[in-house]
Image 1 (spheres, rainbow, N blue to C red):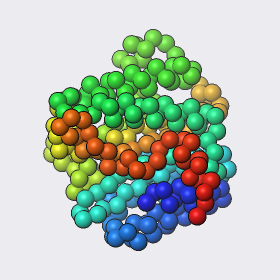
Image 2: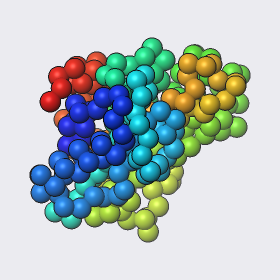
Image 3: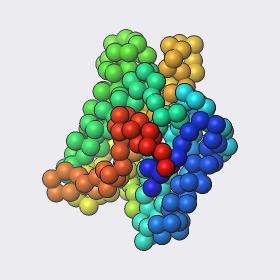
Length: 245
């Protein structure tokens, strides 16, 4: 359903117009309830984790982060895509997008039975640090950067959470580092990068916020991605946005 908003999006619209498009699709397909307050964050708002004002006018050259989910037959979904408002990723936006996408793809390879969440977190964070270091957003020894948790400047939330009858299901079993994954466990996996508007950051990277989120279930051999039919590659997003409604 988020794909409809991706096709609909264009500069000078307001964030709430995308909310309306998404909620229309939810209702049209028999989903009467949202899983949570829909997040449509454009420009700097894409760096606000739980932004729900949704009242900014979207501008040419900005990204917009779309975090929307509905309930269907009592089960919740939680999906995020980040797209260029004008349909074309700028160079720096695309660079950061690919880092997040690589984090996601690595995580999806690692989510399988009998592995601890902290093992997955560690490998994904190492990838994040390596890539941020390679483009000059962080500096220093990678081991030291890992220990000081400098990555939390750019990625301040957890990699995953349970999902089911609630968008944060089974909270009596914390989705923490020590959990060992078992078949049947259902999660939302949501790597992201949020770059502050700081003088220490190269100008063209400031204010870029990107998150990509998929819903999965752990199987006996790995995982099944419920949201795999919703495109997440930059070229695919640009192609879809060129084919307006």
